[in-house]
Image (tube, rainbow, N blue to C red; front, side, top):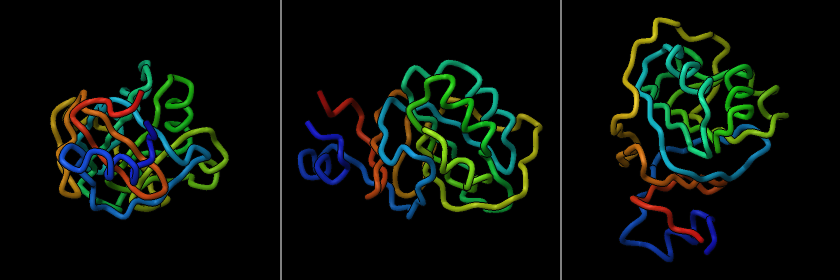
Length: 160
């Protein structure tokens, strides 16, 4: 079974939920998939760092930053942690920075946009709870598939 989001939508129309956010793609990895881990933060990325410092085991980190473009929740150092610790990718409902450096890295990141300002570091937020944006509820353990066409979520793995 293909992991292309369009193919998954066609094959599983009653299962797949499509995120209605026009994400930009960053990094050399244009498509990625894996079980979901979640964070809900606002202009603070201390929990993002703490999470990416741990083994990702092929999971996708979904960071609900409330759509804020005031502060970057991921930069090149955190993207490197994702690569080094085996994360399949990162979806940020917010901004990133260091996009030029990230675009040269073997990482897959979806984000709304960029901003050069660093996020706060107060470790304020919530870890591994269902979080919602773009018409989708992202539940830890569900599966996320991302590619050039967008981001889709299913309650279980959809490919072989």
